[in-house]
Length: 323
Image (cartoon, rainbow, N blue to C red; front, side, top):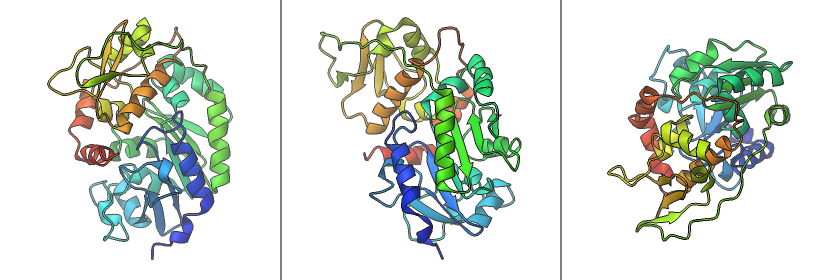
């Protein structure tokens, strides 16, 4: 029994509102779940939370089986075998294991811009702890999404933990009800809010090279610090998955979706997906909020390679390419 009645209008509404807010979720990123002791509904891999009220983006899994995979007692961590309706042509989110193992009815994972901005910086992480003082929150070091991240989360959360800051990744909020989780998200977002220091950049007058147009995110190229950071590292998983490691300054054999011309503008490839455009905007939104005196920690070449060569992410890329 899949118990579709668990997918309440309030749960769908919260999921959709987060997915439609680029400061909370970008493209097919983020995931939400709702569960009881036996069944958990979770966003399917490659789908978008923005569609939660207008299409079927959730899949039901056997919660006990998913918890067994989270604890590495069974399965491979993908939770593909835990789906209760095998006729569905969908996979559960790559984050299913931590959703199942966290003992709260509602779990929401976002790629919150405010959270990411703090979480990519040593100074930001220290300040985030101060801002979130009094909340049941823990901070988790970066790990590859899926089982490696689940291990890090479960090693640190306590029974009363309801918020998790994921270094170089995002935010998890948990609670007994949709309303409780929504209130917690708003509290965390309010505490971590940072102003965006962006001056509008006109698109260059120069004609874009064949196969490209000028992106609206040109500030990334005209702001010296932002350009340096965008060209020298990647700071959270979905950037690597959808845009590749860092941004190049010229087109190359990898056919990058975006090319940054320092001091001039950012080129976006004709036919770039909505997910790629969303991630380019996310990079601008994060770097525009990064205080001048904060340093940053890229995820590094090894972590980038893990993401680029991962079947689960190739699957998500393939689904996103349809949009």
